[in-house]
Amino acid sequence: MAKSSTQQPGEFSIDQLARESGMTVRNIRVYQERGLIPPPERRGRKGIYSETHLSRLRIIGRLLERGYTLNNIAELVESWEQGNGIEHILGLEKAVVSPWSDELPEYLTKRELVQKFGNIFLGKALNRAIELEIIIPEGRRYRIPSPRMLHAGAELVKTGIPLEDMLEVVAYLRQNVEEAAEAMVKLVETHIFDRSSPEMPPPEESEELAQLIWRLRPLVEMAVLPEVARAMQKAADRHLGDRLAYVLDHLNQPASSRE
Image (cartoon, rainbow, N blue to C red; front, top):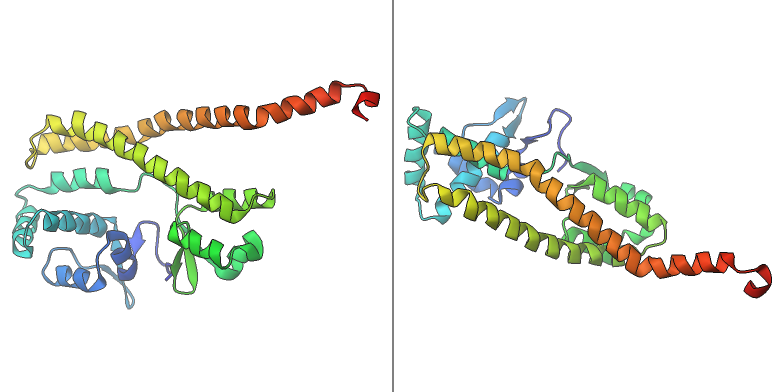
């Protein structure tokens, strides 16, 4: 379901919140009834949730995974709301789980997708794009998490590159990027988080860690993008350099010898 015109970036319906948090609508309602998350903002008949709700749900999910019961979590939330001290953990959680891109999603109909890509964006190509979550069905529309990626794909298709082949490259790229991201985050975990207590860190350490994570975000991008550019240049030199040299050499030959 597409966001209504009254929703702003960072706001969610309950269905959207369930999808983003990986929880069910039923569980969200249970957590709300038990006071684990605050009620949504009411706009007419709609309830609008925020990034604060999403962050709290992610904390609840992690606590459940660690063996906490809902009663345990309710006690923690009550303690926090009485000012006894876990707001610094929520600040750290927000630094960790907030989106690492400022790109906002867009919504397109199937007809609009076809207008961008032609009839090739049907059948296998459409299913593969959904599998890779390049597009995500929501009712009669599709949510596009990265409009920039979709635009780049549409322009490449116009040059004659088959869409299905491009999607397989995206799948291969994603696997390698995820492995690199895993290694990068492990460095942060090992050399930054492990300096603190493995238990709940004190407020001053949590605030310092949160600030450090926010500083790391642009630094990671600055470190990764040059590597992408280097790899693309090497690949272009390797695969296209010989062709370019041939073309230049051919142009330098006398017309008679070219014939």
